[in-house]
Structures are given as C-alpha cells and as structure tokens.
Image (cartoon, rainbow, N blue to C red; front, side, top):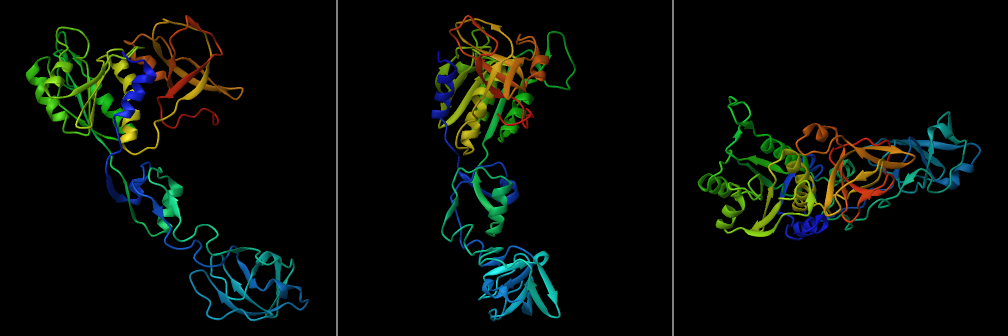
Length: 404
C-alpha cells in the first residue's frame, strides 16, 4: 500500500500528454502549446518611433534656429524619402523611422515656430526609438511546447498572425457512480435511497481541471450493470469511478475491471480519509476508483486525479502545494497521512492554515468552508501550532492577500 507521495508519483509516471488539436487562439487560453512557436520576422519589424513627436538626426538638434519641418509619417504609413540633414519629420507612435533619422523629439520637448522645429531638450542618438529586432529576432523560438497560454502569449501569437494554434487535447473523463441505494437527482425519493452527488461533483472537478467530463448512467451493484458501464467508460481518455472498491460483499468494481483486462497498479493509499483508492491502467488509459463517501471522493480526486489530468493536457508539472504554518495544534493518528480540510489566511507575511471545521468525512459543510487540504505527514503523535505543512488549494482564484 503506497503512501501519499508514492501514490502521486506512481500515477504521474503512468500518464502522458495526449495528442494535439488546432483551436482558435482565444480557445487556447489556459492550455498547453503542443509545438514550439518560432518568430517568422524581427519584432519590431522596422525601426519605429516610441513617442508622438519629430523624427530627427540627433546631431542636428543643437541648431539654435531649429530644423525645417519636411513631412509627416503617421502610424500605418511608410516614409518614402530619407530624412535630409537639417530637417525634421512629424511622426506618430509606432510609425517607421525614416532612413537617416536616429532619434525622436517628443512633442512636449519641442517648440514649432513658423514651419521649423526647435528641440527644447536635444536628444541623444537612439532616444525614443524602438530598433528593429530589439524584442525578438526572426527564427527565435519564443514559446516552447508545454507553455501555458495566457494573455501575454495570446498577444504575442496574434502579433505573429497566428489566429489558431496547436494545443494538447483536453482529455475526456468518464464518470461512473455505482450503488443500489443511489437515485439520480430529481427522481422521487424512496425509503433507504439517497441521491447520487458524486457523479456531478466529480464531473465538476474534472471540468475545473480543464478536462471534458462524460457522465455515465448509474451502475447497480451487480456484475452485468458494472461491466456494461465500465466498458463504456473505458472508451474515454480516463475513467473515474466512485464506490465499490472497499471490502464489502457488493464492492465489485475492482473484480469487474480485472475481467475487462485492466491492470491494477495499486489498491489503497496510506491516507485518512480516502484509503480505499485504487489506480489502474488499460492501453495507457488511467482508471481511478475512488471511495464512495462524497468528501473522500472529492479529496482523492483533487490530490490524485487532477494532477494526472493536468499532465495529460501537457502541463509541464502537476500543481505544487503551498507551504503554510498550522494555526493550531492538530492531534492525529500517527500511522498514516491525514488530509485536513483547512482555511487559509495570510498573517505576518506567511500563510496560516486552520481547520475548516469538524473533519468527519460525513460532513460536507466543512468541505464548503475549506480553501485547501493540508497533508499532515505520518510519524508524529501531534503537530504543533506553527509547524510547516503542504496545502493543496481547493479553490481557483484564491485571494490570500498577496503572493506566498
């Protein structure tokens, strides 16, 4: 039975990035590039003005009578003639610099008198000029495969005239809940029955991770039902099941998966809660069998399934945990890692993790309050307040009052 770190490492070693697909540039945001991106031309493509002002020869600006105004170069045009000595050309930001010009005098540093321009602050050569290729050179690899596309990447790729781009494909994730006691939300409630929340919750978690969830119909606690829907689920890029992997008489998921030629990599992880978690593969497809308890299912998804899905989407590394200090002592069992739902806040420049509430796995309310899950390592009888722990965020856009 692997421990927490070993289980994560084992899973990540058995999954790989999927193939590529070409999508419109805006749809690539948050996704990993599938190929290197090479610059086809120098950027800027020509020497251009960094200011609205006058293109000049810097050496001419010392003339007390100023320079003759000889033309105008707006953005989007191209100067037809080189700049003659002793003259200036009105120029706007981004416009190409005329040949012979080597500086720009901003409007606010100049005075125009009777068709002549006087530089009130004579510029040095190169002042307010963006040189060709000073940002990027033709042939340069500017973004590597695996880079995550954000707004700056979109800006760059658009400037390179790339309306679409190849990114790593999103995995499809089949989600299966099973149990004779389960009803679909919306069905009439009956004695001894409960509504299935795991399928929708795990589908939401898969969607949050960037994958495409596929909800399978509820499976019942018999081999025929399980075999049918597990077979369907194995057509997806990944399969996630909940319940049916413990040691009860009707916990049949592992047996049926074996009958479907699935290779079980491990069963059970030395954590609390979430111990009856299994990981298997078939034809490079990962299969995650999570506990049926809704809290344990969500926690094990975030800690084991999410990083695998992110790797399948080409992200260069799984999400790393934050480091926080415990805001209170936490007596706990010493024999296995404990998953503690915590709230996070910043105090004196450090992240502080405090319990989000009662930690019984039957209490979903604590999950609602939690910002993250702290992994408390085994081997200590108690963790004291102030001790550093690893915390995996459970919320996107978590506002902690500054960077860690």
